[in-house]
Amino acid sequence: MTSPLILLGYMGCGKTKIGKRLSKKLSIDFIDLDQKIESHYSKTISQLFNDFGEIGFREIERKILLKILDKKGTFILSLGGGTPCYFDNMEIIQKKTDLSFYINLDSKVLASRLFKRKQTRPLIKSIESEQEMLIFVNKHLFERNLFYQKAQYIIDCGENDIKKTCKLIMQILEKNSF
Image (cartoon, rainbow, N blue to C red):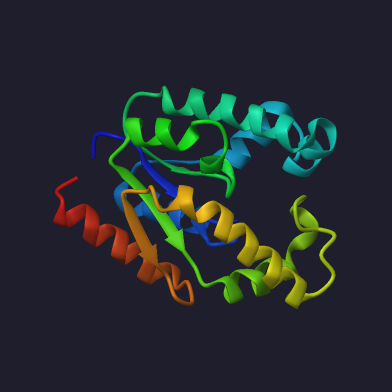
């Protein structure tokens, strides 16, 4: 590998867990964009949303994304769910790597998982039922899928078995001699 491996997909699809596992297998650094933003600003993503609103947060996110993508060498980068969908972020990602992976997880699995962890996520913390969450997730996926589909590789995860997803990504890397 000579360029970054970038994981993208909807919130809760497992990008961070997959990234950490791949990082160990490939012996390269793992960077979680949300964690970088939080450490840079010494605030949680929720606090940044509250302080700056969504568009203000997206500008912050873009600034940190560009800094990370300017790094030389190989690393694994896990994006926030909305990162590819704002400004020209996806076009920049496409220019920086041939290794972008859309982690595509079933919306019912996402909705169930997100409903259990909604308090830590500013976009969904006011959703009151799992059915309402499913409607929200499906609407968002419909809007974001255009951007997610621009990834070089689409990994359909079914029930999101992290080991199986990592194995699929490793097979792609081996097959293409990255």
